[in-house]
Structures are given as structure tokens and as C-alpha cells.
View 1 (cartoon, rainbow, N blue to C red):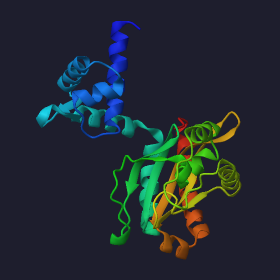
View 2: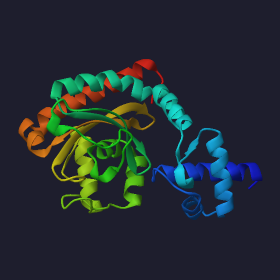
View 3: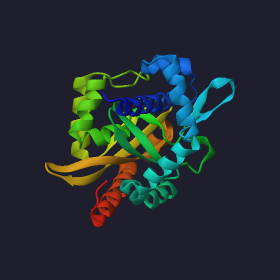
View 4: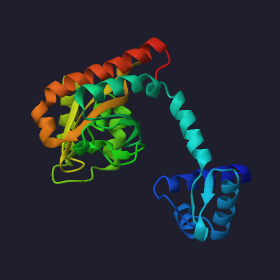
Amino acid sequence: MPGDLRSVSIAAAILDCFAVEPELGPSAVAREVGIAKSTASRMLGVMAARGLLERREGGRYRLGLRMFEYGQLALNRLNVYEAAVPVLSTLRDRLRDLVQLGVPIGAEVLFLERFEAQSVDTRFHGPVWLRVPSHSSSSGRAIAAFNPAVARAMFDAGLTRHTRYTVVDPRRLSEILLEVRRRGYAATDEEREEGLSSVAAPVLVDGDDGPRAVAAVSVVGPSARIRRGGKGAIARHVQDAAARVSAALARSGRGA
């Protein structure tokens, strides 16, 4: 690989490291990327000078403000995000539980936006741009049921158990995806975190082989309240919200 292209490849790999750990030093970066410590130190310094990273005390680095600016630009230009934000706000006000917009990233779901629940007992304290495994997420299942590429990535990555309720049997999960496709929404019951349950519906665009999921709208809340409210009743609201986002994408003529 030519020198310039190799430098770009190394820089991208370094940024990937900071998607996992908030702060890293040259030794850790060198180990994770597979480069010499001197190369890591040099690359980190250059990236910090460009604002992509920020140098902290003790010679450690974290993502810089320029990366945040790039992320905001990408987020604001992402069609599905623009279409979903007003719909999510309305859905949160209607159900009074936390609502999210998730998009597929390989075998995971990345949550682009979250509208917090209005009740103190349902506040979610994780980061907005949270990535979770698709197999244990209602959003991931809603997308995978209508997107074969996402389903393949999910099964290829393996089904890790997060709680005692997580479905880790591939055959059973395949059956669940078929059911999700039939009824149009997915639901999980304490499969990623005990005490929390969720309901999600896919955001669909027209594809060559029929509707294809590019995102999902989900509602998350305490399991007792989700059960009390009735998953079917909640699902109707979530499906309506996802359909509104899908319609907005179709009107724009741009897709996701």
C-alpha cells in the first residue's frame, strides 16, 4: 500500500480505537492498531494538531471537537434523522416513555437520537450514540427482519448472552425474525438489561426485492409498565411513528 494511503488507513484504525475507549495513550493505540509506538505517537500528534484528537494530561488522547463537528454535520444531513426527529418527539409525548431512533452498523444498532421519558423513574443514563448488539435489541430485530444483510451480519457475529432472558439459539432467533416480519414490529423482554423491555418498528424504504429497513423507532421502559400498557397497544403507536418516518423519506425521494 502506498505511504499516503497507509497513513490514512492507520488514522482510520486509530479513530476506531476511540470508538471503544474514551482515552488512550500511544502504547495502547500501538498495540490495538498493530504499529510501532513511535508511529502511534507521531500519528496521534498529527491528528491532535488537526483537531481530530485532543491531548490530555499524562500523554493520553481523546476524540477532539472537530470529530464532534463532523458528526453533527453527518447527523444533520442524514435523511432518516431529519425525518424522524419531529415524529420521535410526538411519540414520546404520547407514550411518556423513552423513544429512540436506531440505524444498523454491521451487527449492531447505533442510536442516533433519544427523547428521554418524562417520568424520572424511566430516565436512561447511557450515551445517545450508544451501540448495542442487534440480536438482543428490539430495534435490531425490527431492522434485521426486513434487511437480509443486517440479519446475516447479526448471525455471523454470534449471539452473546447479556441476561438470562437473551435469545442465543440461532434457530429460535430465526423464528422470531419471521414473526417480526409477519406482525410488523419487534419486542424484547429484559434481553439486554434486566428490568427494561422495548418495542420497535422498522423504517422502510422501497428496495429491489420489496421494502427494506434502514432504521427503527423504538420505545423503552420498565418491564412492568411496558407489560401493563400492553405491547400490542404500544406497538401500534410505534408502527404508526415508523410509518410516518418512512412516508417522509418517500416524499423526499432521497431514501436514508
